[in-house]
Each structure stands twice: as structure tokens, then as C-alpha cells.
Image (cartoon, rainbow, N blue to C red; front, side, top):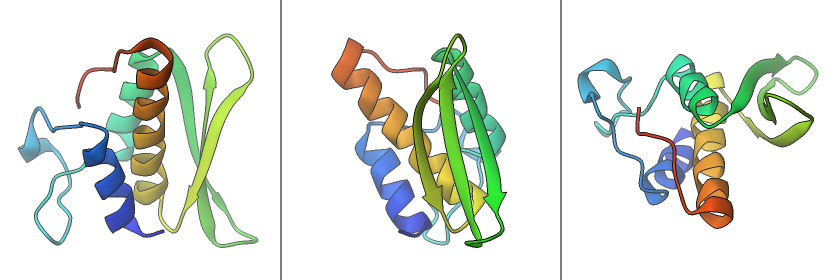
Length: 106
């Protein structure tokens, strides 16, 4: 997938940085949220996000679950940033299709 794709998907979901100076920057200059910032966005939407390294496959898995229940979704990426950013894009798309609302930008 790559961080480029994850950032493209996040921007396609309508995400914008409220404070670009607080965000990591991609090599092309686009800001994107840190893993901790993504966790905060998930919490704001009522989910818990975990990002962990899967040693066997040398990848990162971002998994989110409702605070009150079971797993709601998961994605994988080559880095923790990539997995977290792509997970946020998927959460934002899911919230739009289910409720018509999005968590605030980070």
C-alpha cells in the first residue's frame, strides 16, 4: 500500500490538519496525523485503536473496536504511521456511510 496511498485516502475522506505545524510531514509536504493523534480521533468517535507490530510478517496492524464491544475493523501497513493513517481514513468513510458525521480533524 505505502504511506502515499494512506495519505491520499485520508485526504479523500475530507480530512484536513487543524494545526499542520504539529503534524508529521510527508516527503511531498502534506501534513498527516501522528499515531497518537489518530488514537485521539478514534477515541473522539467512541473507538479504541491499537497499532502493533506483527513480527512474523514484518508489518503493522491497526485494529479498532467500539469501547463497549468487539472488533470493528483492521488494516495493515508497512509502518505504524501508514497503518494508523489508513485506519483513520477507513473510520472516516465508515462514519459517513453510517451516520453522516465525522470526528473532528486532528
